[in-house]
Amino acid sequence: MSSLVRQRWTLATALLMPLLVLASPAPLQLAGVPPSWAVLWLLPWALVDGPLSGALAGLALALVLDGLHPGPLTQVPVLVVLGWWWGRLGRKAPPLERSFSLGLLALLGAALLGGSLWLQQLWWGEVNAAALHTLLAQTLLTGLLAPLVCSLQLLLWRQLAPGLRS
Amino acid sequence: MAMSGRRLRLPPLRLVRAAWPWLAVLLAFAAVRLSKGAFVLDAYALLSRPFWPGTAQSEWLRSAQQFDRQTRLQQLEADNRRLRGLLDLDRAGVSLVSAPVISRQAQGWWQQLVVGQGSLQGVAPGDAALGPGGLLGRVASATPSTATVLLLTDPASRVGVWVGRVQHHGLLVGVGTPRPVLRFIEQDVGVRPGDVVTTSPASTLLPPNLTVGVVQSVNERAVPAPEAVVQLAAPVDAVDWVQVRVQRP
Image (cartoon, rainbow over all chains, first blue to last red; front, side, top):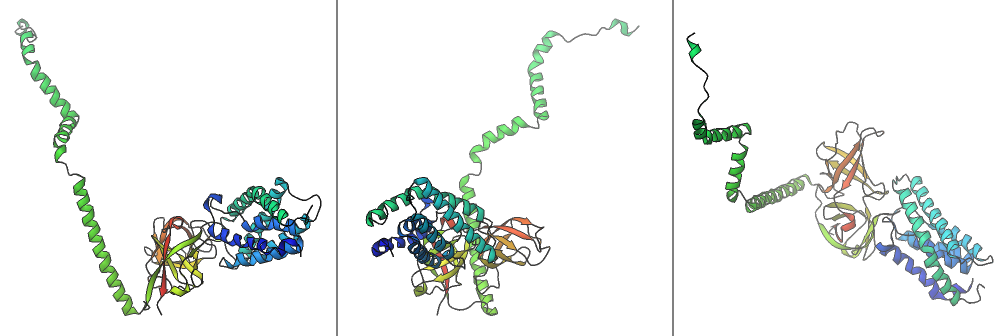
């Protein structure tokens, strides 16, 4: 396990995600839909800390977030896969840190997460007439926020864990 | 010829001059007649305006009507309680717990409220959550100090409701939009826009006769039975406090 996890309080920043999901600040909503905070936290974490840490962080975060919502929908599979995938991308040189790359990765991640939730709703027989609206709004907002939020997180975590990445 | 000596004579100019005020008055009367008394009525309105019934009178009437309605409502509620007690529909020991809304997710993949009262105050899964205007949803889970309310708009929400005008039950199903869908079991239910949707008068799970919303549109061609779109009465976006109906031990 790499160095970000060893500094335990960096992992504790993940606890902000459920708080942000619950608070759901209105200025950071698009057409009433909030961004995918889990994607915005997991992307820089996995890019810095690798696939195993990314997958485990995704699992932990998804379990906490699933506990906040009623119903059978789960974010576990997608967040685990995203954590693993982004962790592998982070191992490649040169490091992914350009705003466009971060925005695109977050956009894809939010789209995959929304798509999986939509499929699960269909699987459980729930009709969601606003699914496309929610998917598009959340994906767009997450992709727009990612360059700002993820860049700051990358900077912070690379300072906290020097030597982890060039 | 006898008449040949008489010539048609115009009235003398002097007479015409003397009679023109009378002619003018006659013309004015004719104008009043032709205009259905327009000038007269307008003049009457102008003159009598200080004596018209003012806003004070309409307020007195409105307050009298409101008082009448309140009295009737209280009498009907008392009657309802008595009759429900006779039918043994009311479980004893139901009370309302006021709870602040501490988290609101009215749109998105989940549509829920988190309220700041939980199992320590007796809130349990299945309890009804009420807001100003009517039913908001049902409690899905409770922790010692919080409870999660699944809104009627959530795709996982299903609540049995009643359309009083046509005396039909239906299932109110959330579809993720602010307006849930009312599904019926029977064909030809006769529901039309404007019908009020309430909880069932015989319901024991939810408070009976509670306003849920108003039918906005009806799709008669839906298969296998008609569907209606319901505009909810309680505004979820503006609710800061809810009341949870809990069973007293």
